[in-house]
Amino acid sequence: MYKKILLFSAMAGLTACGGSSDSSNDANVNDDVLSSSTAAVISGATEVELYYKNGDVNESLTIIDPDDGEEAFVVQSSIATAYGIFSLDSNGEWTYEVPENETLGDLNEDESVSDSVTVTSIDGTEATIRFTILSADALSEDNDNDNDNDSDNDEDNSDDALTYTCSDAFDDDGSDDANPVVTGATHNSTTDDLNELLNSGDVQGGDEIIVSGDGEISIKDTCFDAQVLIRAESIGSTTLETAAISNSQNITIQGFVLGPNDASTLLKIVNSKNIKVLRNTFDHKDITDGQTSVVLTESSEEISIAYNEFLDKNIVVEDEDGQINSGSYIKFQYDDDTETMATNAHIHHNYFKNIVPYVKAGNTTPEGDSDREAIVFGDSGSQDVETNHLIEYNLFEDTDGENEIMTVKTSNNTFSNNTFLNSMGSLSFRLGHANKAENNYFYGTGDSTLVTDANYETGGIRVYGANHTVNNNYMENLSGSSWRSPILIDSGDVSDSSNGNSHEAPTNVTVVNNTLVNNLGGGIFIGRDNYSIVPKNITISDNLVTGNEGSLFNNYANDESNTWSGNQSYATGSAVDNEDGTLGASELEVLSSEPATTPPSPLTRQDVGPTADLPS
Image 1 (cartoon, rainbow, N blue to C red):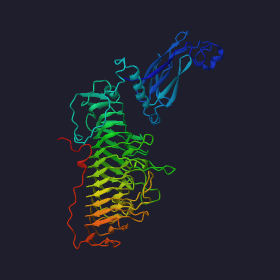
Image 2: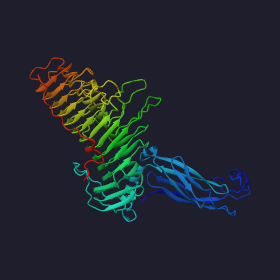
Image 3: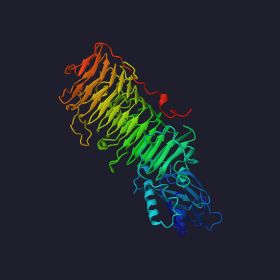
Image 4: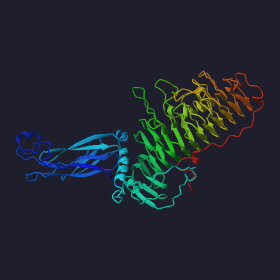
């Protein structure tokens, strides 16, 4: 199936020294060969173009030498070139392999790089093989052109044709993510042979492929009319260096281990539809380079990331310029060139564990921002993109990399039924509008005085922008203050962020039916002194806050457009029910006895990750 463009140079007399036997060429002849030896003539495959990630090149050279016993090459075995690995036997058969390379992976469709290697006959005659490595993105374009130009020769182009014409993505509620249903045949493949099998025509929608052998998976331009399950033989039995899926549809990746290694991204999904990433382990233990588990970009749709575990960003390394090994577990990347990004992702039943805080040398407290969130949704350019993601039933434990456990810079997303245990920072609606935080559980473990405390600055929900909902969340024993207060509808520094990165003052936000118990930093704050523009048209109703420290309700904004009703507080110790005293009895009922509260059951390790919800 591999498609290469091979340009062979077979010119008579091709040698580095002009094919002459003149004594002026003695410098190019081996010291062990007499100067009177006639130079060899080398021809064959000396100019080669190939696509990155499209298989090894296996070609040959020929040699003509009138001197007896000298028609042979000096053997080369696994010689490293600028981009590849080259081998040559004495008969002129050679191979050229291009390993995974970040520079080559970043090539645009119209870009290429050059590489070369020098070969030598046993009489010292040299020749150069030159390689032009084209972008992997150019392959799909070339295949499309070939299909257009050679439509009368379908048989000859069967390897280049798409398995199935990609169609619009369909809605997927994730109901079969726990145990995908295989309705078709079972195939077996190694990682090296997977692409050839996928494009052979033997695999149909509904089939499964059991993959063995460590390595990497890179799937391009491969579309089926139903899910094809590509899985390890058993969960965790096969380790991949990296995986990539681009311009493809209906592919499920299940049961692999990715990492630890030094790749910048372990899995990348580009411009693909109905892709499922199930029951995999993304391991970052002891990695000192910047690294992200999963990057999703361009016009990807209906991506399901479920029952995975994301583990151990356990080392923070700062270089001499003050840069650290940043990177998140999951990143939704906004593509500035196309102004697109992934939409309708469903992230559920995953386990996010252990992002250690970044503490500068000599300090005792973590830095607030280090680009090491658990999940990142876009950037300032994407704030008005309605991505419609659903993030539910995930467990975040000790994810301490940032002010923000998750930073949200897109619109129309729902975060529900997630559990946050001992995680420094907040679920932050940083930019965008109409996001919802419902039925989530935030839990800390008690007093906090040192950075080594597991409960250092554990936070809740922070909001900027318009039309958000914070409903029926439960928070207990959190220690966060200021940016990391349990619920903070913050003040802003602009009224409209206008695609910038400023903090847009909240408007039309609903905060209802939340229960906050014994949080060290207080409770619900409508505005703070971080910025000057106060929140407006905020509805705060039917919330219950109890505790023995801090301000349980703080109406810092005190704007007449904000509506308070049916809220209750119970303060003990040094806690204050209503710090500024602006709320009346109908807006806040101060209870005389401790109310009964029933905390929800938090998710546990058994509820999420690769081994959860498997059939017995």
